[in-house]
Length: 142
Image 1: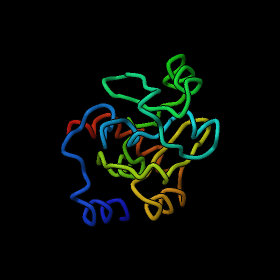
Image 2: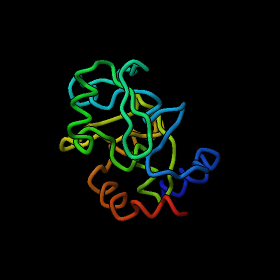
Image 3: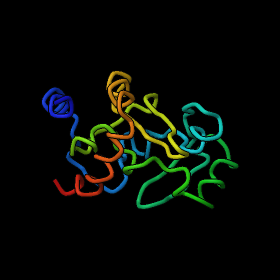
Image 4: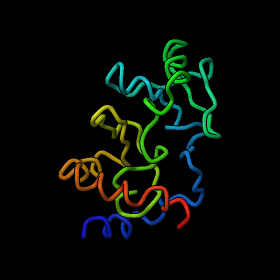
């Protein structure tokens, strides 16, 4: 099974810290602007000038407007599964992400560990979403 292979190939990337929000590099989404994925349709690095705190994590934004949009509706813009790799969550693991491996599906942001993992994810998004939804948030306690 592909998900088991993922866990066996990348055990070092299963994060020891399993906070509700995946914080790598000191900020959620490694400091990328979550609103930019929805509005600009691309990953854009956030600035320390425009930040917000939500669910115990620092979120960075590329503009005051994006920060304000996030603060008004964080659930709309925040990545699913706390910003952990959606494919990893489908396999039962809280795994880090590459901010450039992303997709917006039905208005929701999903992040993946790498472009190659994202290619696997895209082969059956509905199936992996069912699995990930069933596993979340129990992966945080494993």
